[in-house]
Image (spheres, rainbow, N blue to C red):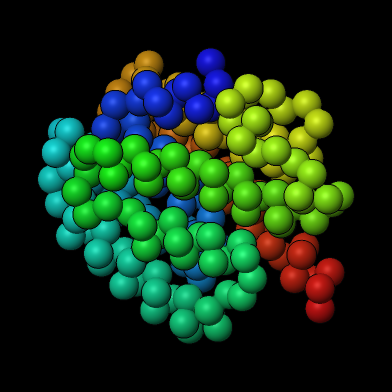
Length: 191
């Protein structure tokens, strides 16, 4: 099943996990540490209402905004996309806004990985087709791995519900390490 189909069929928990996982992998662009989204992940273990999702989301935004300012605000399109993912997260973990956010996070995270890859012509890659078709052939390794991670997270939650959160977090943690290394390589190259 393609990434686009998985997002279309995901329930509210799956959408929230998908969005948080995409954001979590992009946290290095926001100046956040590896624990920055841990409280938000914690809200996903509860029922479909999300419990204190809105409150924890607001605290996370404030913490990451402060971290970003302290780190110099991270310039560039990739950092702007990551900030947009955080800013557009809905305070209510339900409904159409959640689906739109998860879909936007998916597209944004793929675009971030494409930008950070730095190889070839980024405009020549059709991310919409990659999401719709679910194929990774012709994509850079960094971008293909992100597409696979997003698919894996959605499949895990669809198959196992809340029991899949630990596995989804592990997928995101590995992706965050990869993105952090890509950011580091790019900053060394551009220095």
